Length: 135
Image (cartoon, rainbow, N blue to C red; front, side, top):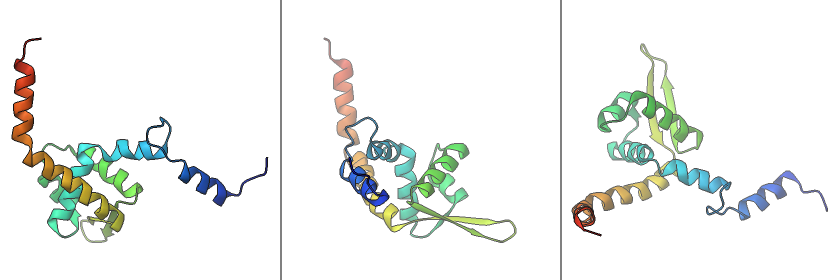
């Protein structure tokens, strides 16, 4: 069996991404971006129309803890979806903005958010119907 170069290994791995496989990296990414906080953070940054400070994000996303927001922002930065810009002021100012990759994902997250808001009455009616049926 011939030895593969690093580039060949990477190309072979990329061609075999299959989110239905348990160990697939694309599945791990789907698990991360399916998190409610990810969608809300991406939408909040985008809807503001400008980079956001941590405190602005925290105020705009009701219910998110400081720990969860910090963890979500770090993960988004690591995945290349958000940039973190530190300005050396007193106190230090930190802004978060979407990268082009993050903006492309935000479009999808925004559509999910819009869909959820538009269909909430139907979902609630379906839940009531399900909960009240006698099996």
